Image 1 (tube, helix red, strand yellow):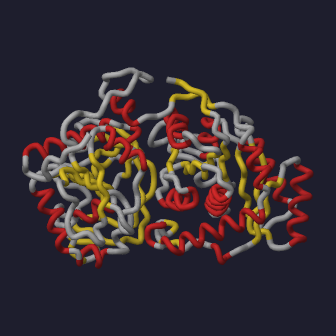
Image 2 (cartoon, rainbow, N blue to C red):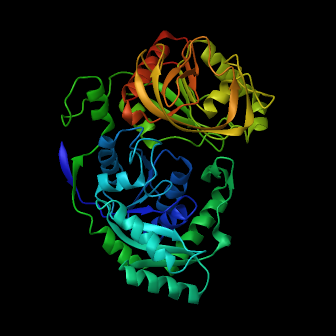
Image 3 (cartoon, rainbow, N blue to C red):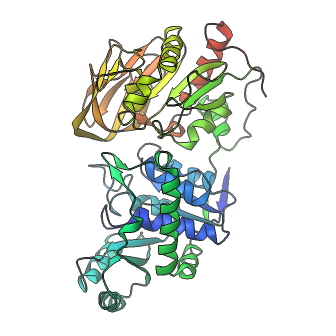
Length: 481
C-alpha cells in the first residue's frame, strides 16, 4: 500500500571518497540525537562498517540503501521502513556524488539515491588545497544533474580563519549556502586497515569516544538549525513501506503488494544461530527481520567467546567480517570449531558469506578452522571489490537452482580452490566464472547479498532449519509463537 512518508531527510555526499562524508554524517547523527531527536541512520551502497558507527551515534540500526543489490524500486520502501517514527533521517553517500556501479550510469550512486528519496544533498568538500576554485567545483556538482538538489556545502579540513573567509567569499559569489566549516582535527580520526574503518565491535569504548568527539566537532562547526530546516524542505515521499512479512508473502506468490501480511508459520520456531562479535560484524538488519518473519528464532553467538552453538540450533548463518584479524583466536576455540563441523556434517543448513566462508575452510593463514570445506584460505595483496550478478547453479539450503540475484565482493583473501565440485554461484557480470561451495546443507561463498532483494532466500533457509530440527539430526524443537 502506498503511503505518504514525511520524515525530514538529508543526503550527505562529497565530490570523492576521503572528503569527510563519514565524519560529517556520523557527527550530524550524534549531534541531532543529543538534542533528543529520533534520528534514522542510512548508508548508500553496500558498506557494512559505517552503519556500525551510525548505530552508535543514533541508538538505531544503521541501514543500507543499495540500488544495485536491491533495485531502485526498493530504495524508498526500505528507507520508509527504517525511518518510521523518526524525526530526521541522515543518509551517508558512497564515493563521489555521481559515482555508481561501473558502466551502469547513475545506478547505485548517491545522486540516484537522493533522487529516489527526493532528498536535498549537502556536499562535504575537502577544502584543504583550494580557495576560490571551490566555487567552480561546487557549481559543477550542482549543475551536472538538475534533478539533484544541492542544498548547501560543509567545508572540511579548513586551515585557518583567513582560509575560511576566502572559501566563504567564493561560495557566496556562486550562490551556494555554507552550512558548516570544520577545521583539521586528527584527534577524532577513526583508525582504518585493509578494508576500511575498524568496525565498532572491535573498539567499542574508543568508538564511543570518537563519535562523541565527532558530535562536538560538528556541533561547533555546523549550523544545525539551518541543516534541520533544509531537511524539512524534503517533500512527502509517496511509496510503499517495506515489511518483511509482506515481502515474504509476495516472494511466495501468495499475496499482491499491499495486501495484509500473513502470520508466521505455526508450530515450533527453528533456532537460527547468527555469528557476531568482533570477527563477524557484517550483516544487514533486514536479514534477521526476514528470518524472524519467516518463523525463525534468531539467536546471536560470538565465535571468539562461545564454545558451543546456541541451544537448539537448527540453522547457522555466518556473515562477513574480519576473521583474518582473529585467526589465532578463532582457531584456539576448538570446541566451537568442532561443534560447527559436527552441525554441518549432520546436514544442518549453513549460510556463510565471505568471512563465514573462511571460517568453514580447512585453514586460514595456516591456522586450523572448522574444516567443513576442502579448501584453504590466506591473506592476499590483491583487493577483490565490486558488484556482481549471480545465478545459483545448484539447489541449496539458501537458494533454488536458477535463483538470480545481485551481490558484492569485498575481500583481500583468496581461497583455494575457489569453487567446490558443486559451486554456489555462477557469476554472469562483470565476468563469467563459478564461485563458492554447496555441500550437504552448506552454502558458502565470498558473495555478500541483501536478502530484501530476494526474500525467498530467508524463507527457504528457515524452512531448511525447520526441517532439520524436525528430523532430529540437529537442534531440536523449541516452543515459540
